[in-house]
Image 1 (cartoon, rainbow, N blue to C red):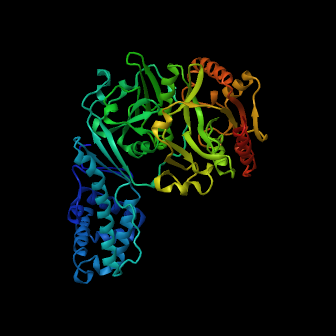
Image 2 (spheres, helix red, strand yellow):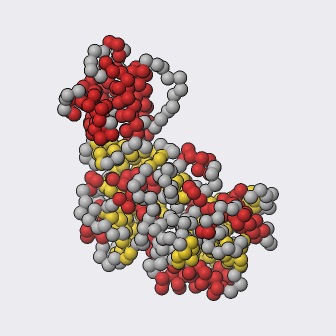
Image 3 (tube, one colour):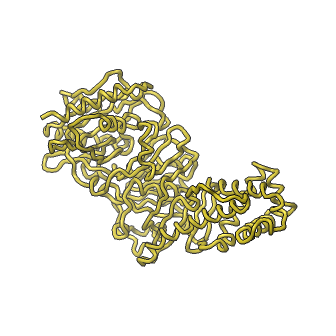
Length: 563
């Protein structure tokens, strides 16, 4: 990003290398303060014409902004009674402007970016720099407000007046892909992320639609973007490495990855990735994936449009590329949740619950956690959405992909979001299908082998209660492969639907390969004595009773007590 300020709709990115303010004089002279003031003036023209006319005072917008900033400078050093100008003659109207201006600024999605030269001083400084900027803006607003109102604050609310998040970026010293990907070689890569949590983001899109399709033309052919408008996030997805390139207009999604996928070190980022994602591709609107056989590289592309604002597009394409890659090496992707339950008698049991969005993965585990008992010591979340099963020495093991969870707020008990609010990223908390992203585990946990003692399909559409164990392995495979569920509105689907193996992120697109993997893995699980069954959550039946989930929790507890 070569410019000091980037403004687009309600997004602002400040390049601290070119436009950092360390004091109020710098702030009032800064390009971003002047531009935001002009934007707010345009906003007032539509929303509050009377205040707009008062602020113009017969001047052009540029001249009015000059006079407004001049007045603010004076208010920082002298009392309003000592100022004789148009704005101070009606302090209440100017105070209305100042307070409205603050709220308008806070409505922006605000980010800062700093480039590192790999000096330890720079890396330590970027968080302090952003924190100082936040304190500067908060103190500036408070001083102006108090001076105009003539009253000191008795209650101080430490608002996040500066940025929502800050990133430290660097230039790759060596690029490990062939010349056909040279367009990506100069894109700056994220080294560190600082998020002011809870971070609350509002987007115009709030659900995912459609599926990802395979293309036989490499998306890089259509990638003709300005490298200064793109940023790279090096992600550790399970034991794989993916480079996520995103258009800066989606920086709020890119930064949110830090709560979901481990940020890879610069050492890993200087190696060949297992796949790449081009997110916000202005030259290709479809959501596609491609296998580059020559490079042994999976390539995904998501188009630049309003729909792509929904974080689910970024998350699910990354997981799709991961699943396609692991299927190639004989691993079976699992759309579900795995937890390790540590018992007070010293035993540990792995519970793997499979189901598409809305089936009840999070709810079932939460019900077990909330069940009062003297059996369970603690529950460890390995993965909450996507993992994989593979065979080593005849035994099936599971591994995860994400260090966090992208959760639907409506699916959680009322208090859960608030218990973790200090570490969370919220998307559209005022809308249906609102979500939060929260870190739940560490990468060293998801990337190692975990035994599976129970594998159950989550049935959210039948009136049945409790849990059922399949005696016939073929019957079990039919239920898992059919992938039946009642949609809860998290995607475009409505009513009862079927998704191959409850996993539209790779297995559905590669059914023949996945069928072979299912046969091998289920055979191994049965040979290892794994409980394979079905759990009835009733969550797709618009019922609000807690009884089905309580029944499930009790059945799971009974299983845990089995010898």
